Length: 400
Ligand code: NAP
Ligand code: MG
Image (spheres, rainbow, N blue to C red):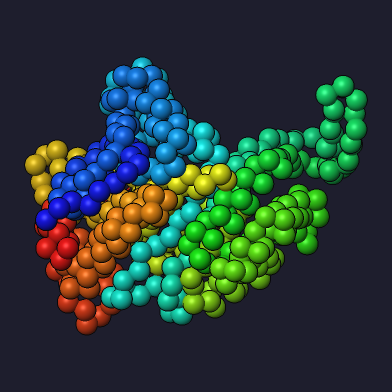
């Protein structure tokens, strides 16, 4: 058969450990036989990041900005132990952090659903996508533990050195704790644009929630910025797409999410997104079935799996043992990126291929052929056989 042609290169970011092994299997078995892959390849393995003084990560992010779409393999974020293990020059920063800083993007996480794995919340029928504002708030807070009586104040000094605000936080009559948080309009605006853009791209309603009734300046600012940007830039597009922007108090959002059928995007402040994404992904089943896409406010996309490099499996693989690591989220990163590339370049065949690839994956699971992690999750009465990663990928290829 003749292979599907591409016009613009896809930015390909290779990674580490078990996911790097899966990466090659996926390309060899599921992509290269069908697509005349045009990719600009960046090796983000820890060895190569170290060899290039992490320049390769910056170059990959710049390429993502230039071409618009990338697919990324999971990568090691080094800690002290990794510095020793890989004999690194430095404890390099998280590649995802570097890429996110360059693209200024928001991460959207959504589960892959199959019939035989029922979400813990019975009425959830469609995926719930969580968008986390990954900037500021408690993650960049300044904290104090105070151990004597005294007055705590919030003070703002402008560039000219004039004190323009001073508020008493609390008069401490005993020991206590104190915290200063901040966020920036520019970051909230980028977050809002990414959310509205992704809602339009995926034709899903967008929910946003904060605690603005209690936080009358801080959270209120988030609410107002979203409202303003919706009214000025997105309202008419939302109306013609038949989707809705819906703001509600975080408590109300939690209650509605649990009662919902799913099928929408839930934009959350940093802390809410951190907590709720773990709740939602656990309730849907497995981290190995979580997809992730970084969307920049100017419309660049980076697709990846939400999980890491699956180190424990990799060490078994190195000992020559067979592993049953689930490649679903990494395959869906490829299909998501190829679909987006096809959409941007007007290549219907490429979009069609991406959809067929996803359908073949789902059919394989529906046929009861699964990696080990999923076998324990399937509902009673479903016949499931555990296979290794390579057998699973082969089974998908057969169905292609
Ligand atoms: P992890 O790689 O996500 O794996 C944690 C555990 O979850 C695994 O040991 C495995 O459980 C299960 N799991 C995750 N993905 C799976 C899959 N595809 N198939 C089957 N089981 C899966 O997290 P980690 O072990 O904490 O981190 C490993 C490395 O990944 C770290 O160096 C970290 O820096 C990096 N990381 C990278 C990213 C990224 O690039 N986006 C994200 C997170 C972590 P069992 O062992 O019980 O089977
Ligand atoms: Mg978390």
